[in-house]
Amino acid sequence: MKALISTTILLLLFCSNAKSQPYSYKGSELITIVFQTSPDLLKKLVPEPVIANPGGIMVIAIGVQRMESGISYHEMYFAIPSAANGKEGLFIPILYLDKALPLYLGREIWGFPKYEAELNYSKDEKKVAASIHKDGKLLIEVAIELENSVSDMKAADPLVFVLKYIPSAEEGSIDVKKINSVIMANYTYTKYQQGLAKLIINNIPDASIGEIPIYKILDASYSEVNFILGFGKTEYDYLKQK
Image (cartoon, rainbow, N blue to C red; front, top):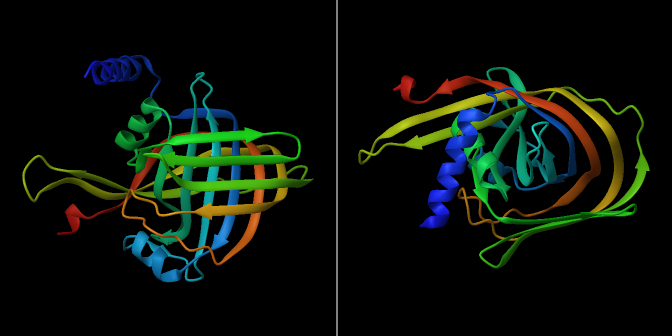
């Protein structure tokens, strides 16, 4: 109970003193692996009217997120290349974090489906590795043997979609159910290295994910990035469509 009260007080203090969005990130480190899985699984994880890519392409990213405010935390997320309202982006079905404050803020503001877990991350000149445990069970383990560095790496600012869902206190009711989008603006690479990856994904207990088969690893990289997480936009409101 004392721990819950302390966390709640810290959250209230942070929210009252923190600058509202946009939030700037600088020097974040990410392992990113693109792999092929079951197209039927993607259809299950991506809610209509968002449309998942038909090729079963999925992305996993794990690393350290560093905010310019001084807050840092470990984070993992799955991303599914998808489309909504004629826009190409990445649908995020789940994220794991190891700190409460960014977990609560991301969930409450944008609707990111964030869950708490134990994340371990290590890097040296030749290898980057990470793992995720929850309730004493290994969920995910990744390792990348680093290879070539790519100078002047550039990419479009990522657009992500999330399902913001808030049930009501009243039985059988929902307060919020909508698809939101947000752009990671000014997304710049300060370092980018290709690599050879090993990936293990066990049963994911949260967000109704379950088993994710890995058919083939298509690409793997390590990167250091800067970006700005700003305001979002409602792409579809399920409650207004009734």
